[in-house]
Image (tube, rainbow, N blue to C red; front, side, top):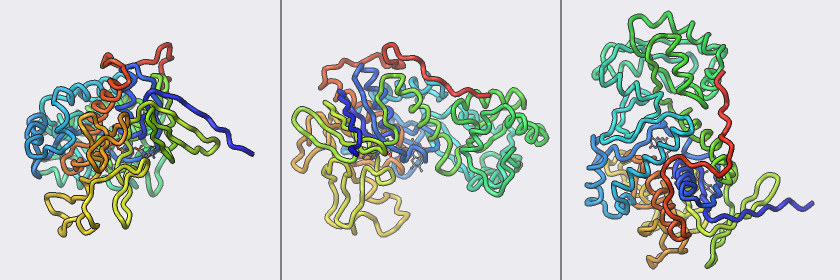
Length: 447
Ligand SMILES: Cc1cc2nc3c(=O)[nH]c(=O)nc-3n(C[C@H](O)[C@H](O)[C@H](O)COP(=O)(O)OP(=O)(O)OC[C@H]3O[C@@H](n4cnc5c(N)ncnc54)[C@H](O)[C@@H]3O)c2cc1C
């Protein structure tokens, strides 16, 4: 029997469902473009949830990412941030955070300075915007507030005692407690089912009863990131009302709930905003021709062709499958785009694993022009309307510089603006986007 075959025609197709891909789809809808988006799981599930812009330069934490970007443009002119003005980067972050907040997931605005955010194991990192559920932890650290850190029997990779011990020099006197999570008193527990369970009133009531005896005189309680998947701000408020303390989340080791929250948020809301979203389907083949780009996708039940006038490629690096390392070199997996790279694999890594300069392989990727179009070996755009954004770009090491989400969002902004200008759309209202006549996305209730 012949498999069903479907065809979609769009102005812009976004390939990738990481932060860069979702940002690109939102920005494109804000410009009024007709948008399709395809992708699968990837690095998004691993994020802490923090939106970094530039946290580290020359191996040192920096307080002012905006001044850091000015300096980066001087020291690393080939960095993708070098193709963007600070005003555009700010506009991109403001638009993205505005959209996420409008969809019901609280994030703090991108400010003038980095914040000091908490990590599991009791260390900190500089970042620019935090989920509202995590922001009180940064504030409590700044005030050295009397706090209790809670972990759970059977939860791997998050120890309250270790957190308190490593924090002792900067945040002395942290109290700790270990609880059995209600309904999961088994050997091993995982953050995602715990978070989903806390969306029910019954689990919250049982949890409050177990936590209350440990509160003593603390004003704050820090928990691993388990305060619900769909409405974490509501879950936190409900628990705070019962407990009479300020709660904050600390990211867990990956994969963690904050990335799942973002992914599920976009999956719920983007179709209502007019994006033809295929969140569990990778593009298998791509064909370029002078008038556009055709993608072929093979789902479990049907084949799908997407014909696009323009494409934003946001497929990430090795973890998400945008790049692949082979014996003969590193290649871009969908279009076979040129990846500027040294002659041999010996040059991918420096001899010392902990070399403070990092490893060259982490900077390999797609070289782009000012319109974020991948370039061929001769330095010309591979296609006039093929753009790239996010971690797949060359000349940056987002993990080392703590710039993952910021780079993804800002480059998506630039790529979409360039594609939109080529397609004749004007910059839209950077406020929240809605498809004409679309019903608001149904929020799963918090019982
Ligand atoms: C462990 C870890 C911790 C992190 N912590 C932070 C943090 O604290 N702060 C921060 O700002 N950032 C953090 N990040 C980075 C962040 O999650 C993103 O990796 C980064 O922002 C880059 O996003 P991206 O969208 O470019 O790529 P990715 O997130 O890698 O997404 C790429 C997408 O492309 C899809 N894809 C690949 N090939 C195809 C194809 N052929 N067809 C369709 N789709 C395809 C993948 O399925 C995936 O959805 C962290 C990442 C990791 C791995």
